Each structure stands twice: as structure tokens, then as C-alpha cells.
Length: 312
Image (cartoon, rainbow, N blue to C red; front, side, top):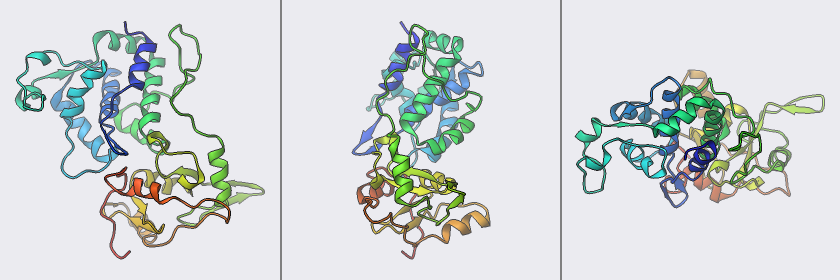
């Protein structure tokens, strides 16, 4: 029986490919794509269309990898989570790894099980909750809006307190909650000043224009401690989370050679390459190497879009 509580629980228990500290967001991205299409009245998605829609998302939002991302894996393996079906799967000719041969896969269609699709269509509050669960569990907040827009989910407002199975507004427990002290302590440690650019703005006694950023994403088990935090202006925060820049072990800024944009944007970021990050006040923990390496190195977290510019 697929009531809303069972669907949310299945989303929370989604099995994600992982090696060491590196996790792949392929299944969450496929679910978001499928929800976007379902809201447009499309219950079935042929594999060629899944491939066309998923590949750009994997290239932008998944950790970088050597070679090409393979949409066939989430498309096929999502079935094991009870949220996806590929009709005729049992009779499709398989390769040695258990994935259907590409010719058969390209003729197939994937979809939410009919009962789940009907539940989503009847309850947009549930859709909003599931979208928020997927975003919160697998991506940092700085890129949520961009992902919604890219997938076509911008019309789904961020979820209000989740609904329980009986329709009440009771708040289910989440696996991890953010420590409300993290923001205050990080801003205090860096004196409300961007650690990369030095930007700080104040009006009277109020500071604004900067944010407390996790280096190892909170969604991927990054702790709410000053040693995993930086104060950054919003643009630098988003660029950090997207992997446009990272840091060396001695806390110098590394800019991705893949970063492009307007002359102003490129010039602004590249001018920081090789510059040291500002350090926190004495008595506060500096950024830990373990979190720097998680962000920079492909085998750990691999968010940074290697290679870096030369000269550091």
C-alpha cells in the first residue's frame, strides 16, 4: 500500500551508490526529473528521453568523473527501491552485469508504479515534501533553486511542515538537522567577512551580504562545526558548491580551469587563484584539511571541477 508515509519513507531509504566518502546523486536526480514530467501529465518516460534529460544534470550536479556518466544505471537500479518500474524488465535480454542490452533498453519505458503516480497526482503537498527531501538529503541549499528551475519544478514551492499519513501536519524526524549555532559561530569566527574576497557589509550594528557555508556539504554528512565552515558572499558560496573553486591543503584558493562566463565573472574568480583564504579569529578552529580534501579530491567527495588553473 503506497500511502504518503510509505512513499516518503522509501525516498528517505533510497539506496545510493557510494565508495568511501563519495556518493552518486543519480537516483535522486532521476526521481526529480520523473516528478517534473509527471506534473506535466507524462507518466511514462522512454529511456532515450531519460538519457537526454539526465545526462546534462549529471554533468552539472554530480561529482565529476573520468569518462561519461551512465544514465542506464539509475534508470535500471531504481526499481530495487520500490519507486520505479520498467515494464517487461524480466524478459529483456541482459548483459553480464545484469543491465539489459542497449537495444532493448532504448525500446523500454520507465515510470512510477501506477499507485504511486496516482498518489502524487492527488497530493501536491506530498510532491513538495518529496522534492524537498531529495534536495535536502543530496544537495546543498545554494543550488536548490537552480536545480528546481533546470528540472522544471520551480512551480513546486518549498514544502511546509511535512504531512503525516493521517493528514496531520506533524513533523516527522529527519535523519540529521542543522545545528542553529553553526551560522552564528562561523560568522563570528570570520567577523562577518567573506573568507575569499574580504567582502563585509554593515548598516548600523547589522551585518549582511554573507553566508555561513559548509565545505563538506551538510547533505553529505558534513558536520556543523567551524572547522567545516567558511563565511562567503552568496556568489562565492554557490560557486564553491558547484565546484568552480576549491582549496589547496595550505588553504589557497584553486580556481577550476573549466570555469567560464562573462569577462567580469571570469576575471573576478581567476584573480583569486592562488590567494590565501582569510583565517578565523584566534581561538577559532581553522578549516580542516579533511574537509578541504573531501571537496577537492575525486576519490573523496570530488565536488571540485578539476583541473585547477596552473601557477599554485
